[in-house]
Image 1 (cartoon, rainbow, N blue to C red):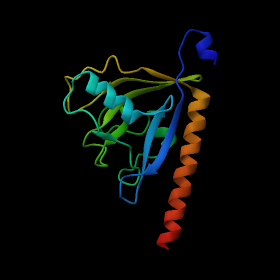
Image 2: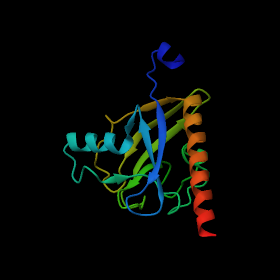
Image 3: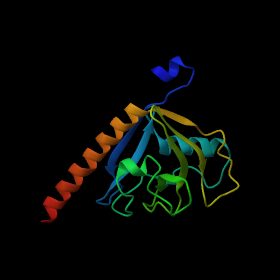
Length: 163
């Protein structure tokens, strides 16, 4: 990739769209370099000795909270609810505000960066060694387009079943 040639490591992102537990709702879990973000953060917090840690995070559930267009949300434009950062994961219970993983999302013409992670309910936790994750802008936007199509298809099928 262009960014690797310039000495900037580029990660790859995809968004898994899956059923949340036994509920009839979809959740979105970012997958970075093939690993779900839930696994990456669980490993980081557990290795750092943070408590609670492990299995605390889940995906975002658009049906439970109106994030707005997914492209805006994952470009860091949709939330002011908890300050300038964007929730990239929610609580394993399905409510993003219960136990969110927040990130700064910076978008340029060529790169999207997730950094400055925090758990707002534990302000003393140090996430400086988690990330940053840098994504090629074109690959990132392709992943968001695939996610939007999957969410739209799933929502359309659910609406057909309701009607």
